[in-house]
Image (cartoon, rainbow, N blue to C red; front, top):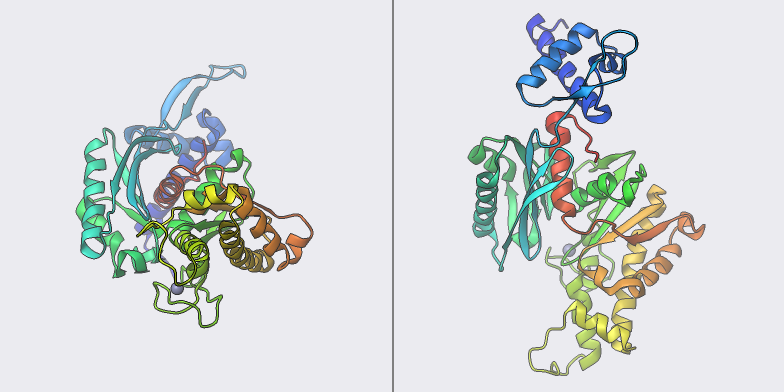
Length: 398
Ligand SMILES: [Zn+2]
C-alpha cells in the first residue's frame, strides 16, 4: 500500500522532530553536528528541525563547545522549563496536583481534601484542581497526566471502575481534554507510582524491572518490565487488591468476598487490631474509638500482642500475593508505598518471610522488598512522566 506522499512527509517530519528533541534532551548540551552523528540524520535536516524547535521555545543555546580546528560549535539543550505538565494524584483522602517541568521538578503544589466526595462531586473537585493549576501556570502547558485509583483504559482515557470514587465507565480523559484544550493521559495510580519509582527512585540507579505495591485504603501493584510500564491485556495488570484470598471472607467494596483488600488494607489492619484488642463482640474501649495506623504502630512498639497479630496476619497475606507476583515474573525489586509503610520493619519482615515461602527467586535471597525511596508525590510525578512520554517521546531523566 502506497501512503499519500504528503502524509508520509509529515510523518517523517514528526519522527525527526521527536528524534532530535529526544537527543537534545538526553545528551544536551550538544552541537548540531553531535545530534546529526547520534541520529544519523543529515546536518541540513538537523538544522531545520532545530530552527523549528527554537521557534517553539523547546531549545536554547548554552555557549560554545571545544573547537576541532574550525569555529567552536554552538551547544544546544532543552530548557527544563520549556513546558510544564499538570500532574494529578486522585488520592484517597486528598486530590493533589502540581505543575511539573520537563525534568520532573515540581514548581507548584495544590492539595484539595476529598472529604468523602464521590461520583459527580469528585469529578467537580478534579475540575477545580485543574483550573487552579492552569491559573498558576506562567509558561506553556503541554498537557495533563492523571493517576487515579481503579481500572483505567489508558488509550481511551476511561476509568472502567473506581470503587471508592463511585466512578464507572467515566471518560475522564476526554472530559478534561474538552474543558482544558490540552492532551490528557490517564493511568492507574499504582502503575503511575511504579513508573515514578523506576524514573526517579532508587537513587537514580535504574533497574529495568520492578514491582511497586501500594497498600493504603486500597491494595494494588504497578509493574515495570524492561523499563516500560506493563498494563496487561485489560490495563489491569497488578490489580492484586481484588484477588480473593479468603474463602467465604468478609464482603469487599467491589461486592465480592474475601479480597486481599479486606484483610490487608490500612483499614483492614486497624479494624482487625481493634477487634483483637477489644474482643469480637466487645464495645470499643473508648466509645467510638477507631484506631489509626499510628495507634497500631505505637501499640506494636509497646509489645501489644493484638497489634502484633494484626500486623502478622496482614503481612502474611501481602507476602503471599507479592511472592506469587515475583514468582511469576522473576523480578528482583519490590517497593512498597502507601499508608501501611508507617508500620515499618515489623510489617516488612513478615512480608519478606511469607513471600520467600512462595517463590524460588525469593528463597535464593536475590529479591529486595523495601519501602519506596521517593514517597512524596510519587503518583503526580509518574503521571507527568507518562504524559511527557506520550506527547514528546521523552523518557524523563534528571
Ligand atoms: Zn474486592
